Image (cartoon, rainbow, N blue to C red; front, top):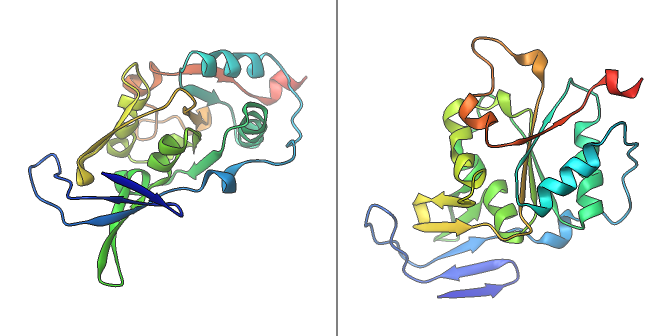
Length: 207
């Protein structure tokens, strides 16, 4: 049973996937109005990247932006967020990023357990765009959590609260990848790559 109160949802007596009973707790969710761009972020198209992204969005396909640092991938995502009129949640990936950082975790506040959605879960609930910037920097076991969202299932497994979160048609997952990071230790797994539509970015496209 769910109740929406000022960005909080009260979930009564959930049972997680291991069969453990969890007491009443609140879920803190994203307020979409805080993640919209009111003014158009300037972006000059250099190829067909806008058309590719819009086609992928209409067909509910995730997008992979590939290009070197500083070529405009983040600004492109801001522009597409404004263009599609969807909230944009950006995550700057790093070595210490965990699955809980993306999905969410329990916190104790004023003597009660509060579930705080991570940015990925928040974007899924709000039907927004989740942009994982430089995803190759994240730990490989962390990026696995996006796989069910990046194929035809379009779901996010939230084991700690016993919830299978289904993405709405408006939700979009996008990641960026700097090919300069490619090495034995830092590369994008093939199982991740094959789920995404490519949108190439680069300085050579601007010539």
